[in-house]
Amino acid sequence: MPRLLRFAVWSCILSVVAPSWAVGADDARKAPEKNVVEKKATATKSPEAKPEKSSAAKKPADADKSAGPKKTDDAKKPAAPPKKNPREYVSGKKWNEPTVITPGAEPAAPPSDAIILFDGKDLTKEFVDADEWTVADGVATVAGSKSVKTRRSFGSCQLHIEWAAPAKVNGTGQGRGNSGAYLMNTYEVQILDSYENETYFDGQAASIYKQKPPLVNACRKPGEWQTYDIIFTAPKFADDGKLVSPAYVTVLHNGVLVQNHFELAGGTYFDRPPAYAKHAPKLPLQLQNHGNPMRFRNIWIREL
Ligand code: MG
Image (cartoon, rainbow, N blue to C red; front, top):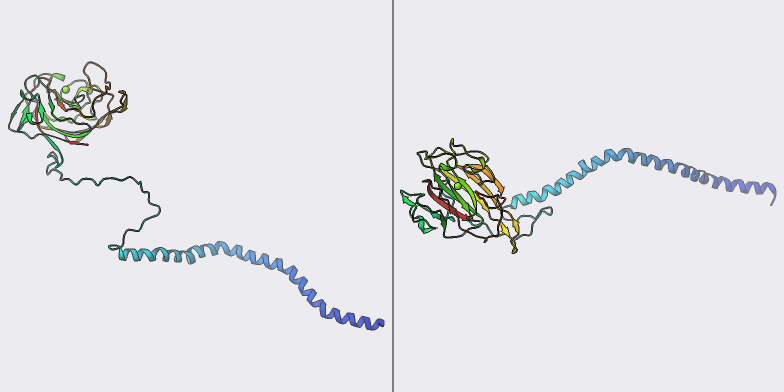
């Protein structure tokens, strides 16, 4: 091919191909830039876009989702079964339905499921060794030499007792208006005329005898009726006599909390430190005869 013709042919080819090369190279150079710009745009957009998405776009959608069924549930609430919340904790324990009882009309009146230990008529019906005590006008008065014990045995319980010290003060300290409620015939909640009557604190009214004074002295005057409401948890023992769980007692004296879930260190004794000794899971309740003409009425108990 002549030289001039070859030049003409190549020029022609180049004129066709070169622009596309140029564009391709330009695109290749620009492409990353374009990407960066786009990324930048996305990056700058994203923080704004996010809230837009979550608040403006997503939230309404979510809100619609959550609001939708709620509205439906609310509308159908009386008829529809409760929707189970997947986050709800369910213990899996099978409880018996709590028994429905009728509370007493008066705070001190026995509820319908209480065992009446003394209703003001006959102390011997529920107590042994009660022959010497006198009953008159709905009131039992300590007399003779014996303490009285319930015929039935009890473990954990709620106990209500109304008591009154003699109106005529006689004696001092432990010798004045002394009696006691011995839970399980072993653990004494002290009954004493502690109205302006000095004695050791862990021996005054509503003390756990020799173990714990009451939180406050809520005693009424001698002769006035007073109430004890006692919640008692019986101790538990292993077969070998070892203590498995101690006794606990809560006491309200005239409606005032004076012992708050107190853990007993054992039996309450006059002459020795408290100590546990294995005993039956249920034992009688004792009302102490300490030689003072203490009066009692309206005694009832609920087993727990
Ligand atoms: Mg006593």
